Length: 250
Length: 208
Image 1 (tube, rainbow over the protein chains, first blue to last red):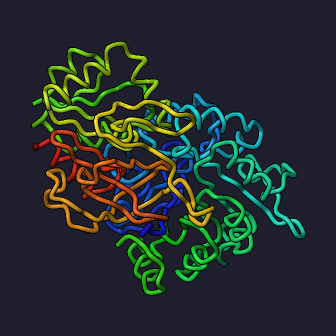
Image 2 (spheres, one colour; image 1 turned 90 degrees about the horizontal axis):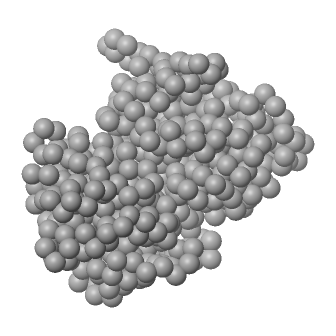
């Protein structure tokens, strides 16, 4: 039976982790390679890096980070943030990323999704959707949540599936950072409308929230803060989900 | 000993290279090449593959003499070869992804889309699933039955002779996830992304 995945996400800025894991005896709490390793040793089903480096001149640091991580981590590695073109995707894959997540570029130019999924295979193309509720629908935001595209999230999700996306990484901007749980309605709506897996993101504060995400139709749950601040380990999450009869890899 | 990973523009092979180098350490020479002479002189060959069946077959055919060299290596000389994901699928006679495409024809059978029961199951089949080991394959030495492996695919290999199947996995239907025919091995899952258990499979192949 296919297991539901738990994916810790690390925000990386200029080659350093911004929110680190709260490990007391870890000398360098800001090293993404080291932290990815701790997560994978702890049973993470995949690792996700989000490159939040703002300046172009520092962008190359993410390639070094991906390259070192992929030599030490033998679970799938997804990298996103600032991916603009097919060439960017190619570079990340060559450095050892297994999947690349595309956000703004997918909205601005869906051809990038079409072209890259043809060239590299759908399995490595993840489209990241940042959605915010507006009355009875959700709208897509780009540029790290700053710009409202006005596009309907549900229609966009279906379009991305048609363009060749292998997975959708769905973040609720209303919930992100609140630790009050995923946007259950959003997950439910999108995952029941597409045939590709949906990764739920944004808002996890408790173990129950992870179970809610899976029960709303997500194939995988992504979280950041609950892991970084040492609130829960990956193994805590898995034990809890198993107790709730949600299949996980233990 | 020399193990060669065939680099034929079949998509992203960094993880395959990293995992084989991790397992081989300094004991075994891991080479990544499309050079026919170097492939021929290898002790073992790894045939990776990502993307569609058609794009991988096209990429193989684009390198003049590569298919013949692989045939010589695996079929005539009977040296060990491991196909991963689409690398395994290409063992078949024919594949139906994008359009009907002829495979290597090493193991009679076809590659067709996983039946997702009218959308009841998501495709691709992505994530960790357990393998049910059906025969004592050499690459499964010290691998426990029902171990988790990492999968990502929408198509499955359906061999004619069920005796070549060494493991199955259970998704929307039972899917062939590993085959062994004499010196030819293949996994539908990605041992290079399947943590320590996956690395053990790679180790087993290197130590054949």
